[in-house]
Image (cartoon, rainbow, N blue to C red; front, side, top):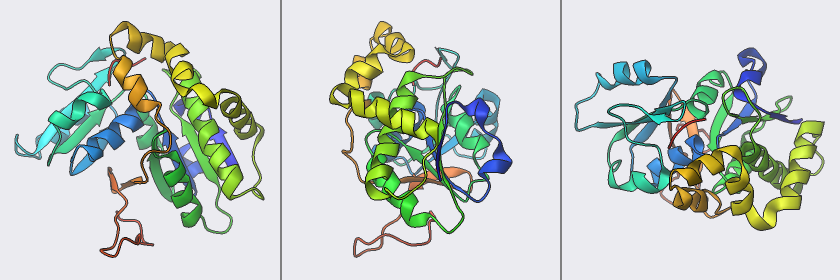
Length: 258
């Protein structure tokens, strides 16, 4: 079964246990994670809040980590704003500790999943292919929209529709819940102008008000990255590849908030 949860508050950790889970926070946390890895971060550690981030940072030498995060629309003091387009100048070779209001919380609440991925519009198709490959009998694929402080948000619903549309193409025989079907219909109706959908969302409007148009443009590029961010043992890295380019079957593997 393919299921979509509309916001992080819908997560019941025990119901995710053993299943394949894909978390989305399109604007911006899961996109920020992929951007940090793309910029050369050694790994990304999602945390629930500022205090957890600061406590975790004491385990590292100051040159080994970087703090990235926001809470309720404000960049945290001493943290870098989690705008994907700004990260490359800061993260290379470092452990990125990321705290956001919604996306990192959704990831942490999903830790009981059998497999857990952080997806974006940029790498969604690659993540779906990997999720299908990881699927075992009696497992479901559950797409988690992080939402916006307890509210449904348009951009995650659009992102879920993108993932479901990919699943419909690759696994047409699968059973899809009504929520999954609805997200796919919305995506298929709107996909010719991803930027407009994102920019018209409440969070997109907020980003535009804060001169973050380039971040929305970055996010809106669909299926331009075939690397898969996988969550394992509390941190996220790219899914590893063998030296011959094949993938391992065993997975080791900003902004202002709402």
